Structure formats: C-alpha cells, structure tokens
Image (tube, rainbow, N blue to C red; front, side, top):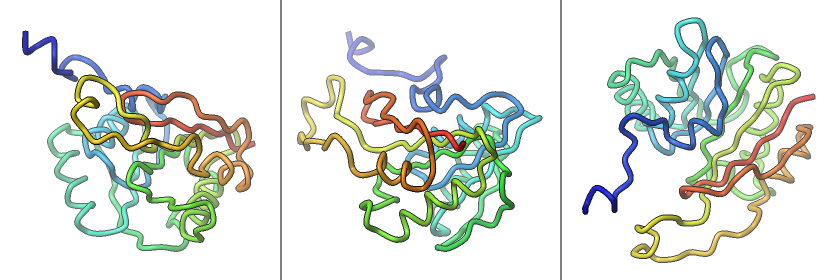
Length: 186
C-alpha cells in the first residue's frame, strides 16, 4: 500500500523538466537553484551536442549543483554571479530557466529581480523562450499534512517578463507545487 501513497520519479522525468521543453542540441541557461535534481535533468536534456550553463548567487549553491551534476553525469558549467550583468554574449541561449521557487526574483518592484529578467532577455536569441518556475499551489497527499499557504494568482512575474520585452507571457500550469510561467523573446 505504501507504494500507492508516495510519488516516485524512477523511470520518469519530473514535470518541471518536461515543462521547460528543452531539446537535444539546445543551449540552455539556468538561473538559481531550487532543486538540484531538476537543474541536472534540464541540463541532461541538452545532450552531448547542447550547452548547459548555470548561474547561482553563492558558492554554497554552486557546490550543491556540482554534486547533483556529478551524480547524473550532466555536463553543466556552473558560475557564481552575485549581481549585475550575466557573463554571456547577446543571443547566446535558446532557453532560459529561472528557478524562482525561493523568491530569487523578489517582488516586481525589486531591482535585482528586474535586472535578472532584463539580462535573460539580452542573452536569449530571438525566438528564444524563458520559463520561470515559481512556488505553486500545494498538491498531492503531502499537501494535506503541510501548512497550507495560499499562493497568489500572480507574484508579478508575468508583468515583469512582459515589461522586459517578452511576448506571449502566460502562466502555463500550476501543478506539483510549481507554477510555470513562459514567455518568448521576439
């Protein structure tokens, strides 16, 4: 009976990875680190012909990321960037994934969050996609036992992405504890 009550990812890719839509050969930039396993799976989806870069805010997250990629065998270049400009040329990446579950972007009025979004816009190629992973509504049996915190419909990420120049910005889904927000660089 216990096997029916727990969710397992053995033999399947986590929903957060599938929602990012990363394909073989793509160049993907990930900013922030919520769950190292999700970061490693997204990086592995690029394959040997792709490129995966991770930008984190401190060395502690960089160590967590390196440990997770070593376990999965995903090739990820991890960089620690405290703030400011991302160390990449314009139009370098096909996909940018912002791990915002822990509030990396802050509120829409916060300058560092807005700067992160503007920098994502700069380093994405025209037609490139951004996917923000935020904390969503609790789900599953474990949600019954966790303190329920209501999640607001929009933390300002949709408006911030649109203000930075992304088009077709929308909340794609709110499942498995994540809210998925997507936009495209024109």
